[in-house]
Length: 535
Image (cartoon, rainbow, N blue to C red):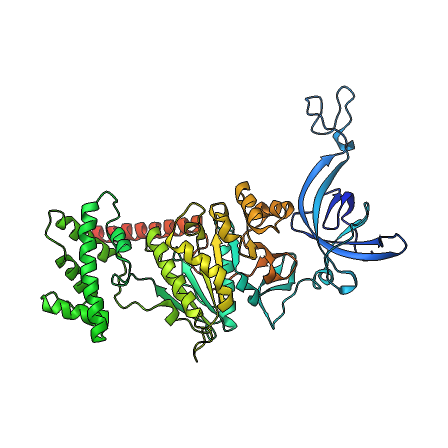
């Protein structure tokens, strides 16, 4: 090949989809390579050229002469007792390369022929990879660039997200940035995204195109009238041994809520209005409807020596939780070009689980109205952060069943689910194995890498070996959303995501120290002035 030099040769082992590469120096993991070779037809009568591209998986050094670790060998190559100098030892690097595709004649197809041993291996160029990857504006959403090729933009097919998505990587690997990029650009194209924000990372999210995308914050609230009584009792009184207190509260909730619902239906009134009327009748009315409900609930408690403890826990719950008797459903806010950020960061894990169940069920029923009315539902992507909390293999969560249904039924009605987790080993394999699109960011622990290999069936050992080496913001994308061939991508940096990135701790400390010094200096200066004045 004129114009550029080979970086190695094909080694002793060569298969259509995987080859060994020998070189004098290691080619870094994640590097794209190009191989051009001659192959023969099955009968051996005709010889023809093939071109393939691949990606380096793992690499290692190996000395061609056995290295003996002994004090007789000098660090500088001098010898004692006839030992050869280190400079005379020939050392080579051995790598495994995964062959991604055959690009002969500009046509992309699965590789079928193994490159012969000793065939030169080159670094791939833009022209080699552009036939496989590339942004298609008509159907794709841009997410970043192919690693090493900034001008080769990579897009994902949004329609393929109907088969759902798994995003996994360690803390700080860039998961939330990828979500921000996806959500913003899907919404920019007219789509709808709901982010179930477990840690409050997205509450300050700003769109990169504020004129085209509406970011709608939604603070999750508990409606004590519509919530199942047994669940609400556990939230207010979490201690399992407090059976007496729970019984008192359960009876009061059932009696009060039944009365409110009955009056609301018969009089066609809102819960808020009914609560105000009941409070007024019992001289418990307040400007705040939630406060009135709380006082009504305490009033409905039967006389018992445990009543005071229950009242204290009711007051604590209503003080520290967002309670709303007429909270809007998320589906009522779904709109084209909108990102809805559901902030549940102030809730406990149990409360988050219940809220996810309610929201996922609401969105699924909303989507199932497809074809039943003039206002057609808008296909929506639901993003679930920290999914291992809700989809754990050993977790009997409330939301697990509805998320399973969302995966099974959602795609028929425009429902897309993105499962995000830093602990793939904790996910239920039976649930996540139904997902068919993947974004793998940095994964260090061997058990996590083994789990994702089991989940996907398409992540080979060599791709798994790349995962611990990925820098923040780099991802391996697999599945239908990127086409038939995996892509190693540097995800774009989302400028509108302010929370969630690791802070520069030492910089903050330095700034605080400077402010402290300034304050001390001003205090001393003021003290000196006062002393002078008094003198």
